Image (tube, rainbow, N blue to C red; front, side, top):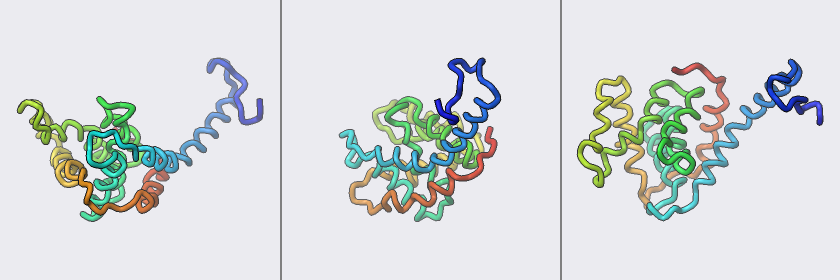
Length: 187
């Protein structure tokens, strides 16, 4: 073991020094978060065959549309990672992406990210009308319209193989700005 490795095999046996090692390691991990987000986005460039474009191109289109509409950093990063969990959490990908964002962006953006899959059902003609209108359960929520707008303007329209989106490298500075913020408390 090195001075950077804990001495215990069970947490209950850890010393103050061990937990200081863990805290220091956690700080380094947090500093590397922007790089890990970027790498995970790059990994989304595989073609799963269902769409005319790959998953990376979809989120790049969404982020490009958001940026061109004058959106702030929170929304641009939301557009970039709103589907980051599609592969590992296909039934709860909005929750996964929202939890990644939650310490770094405002509540409105977290809420929209979490609920965008429900709002996207509106466009799915294979669903019955009740399922397509499931977003209406949130009609009185203060972020309802933001979710409608996110889906209408940036998400549902971003499957176009002819759209000229910015490359991932263009968005690296905003990713680094947002995920380098000091975390704040969201509900």
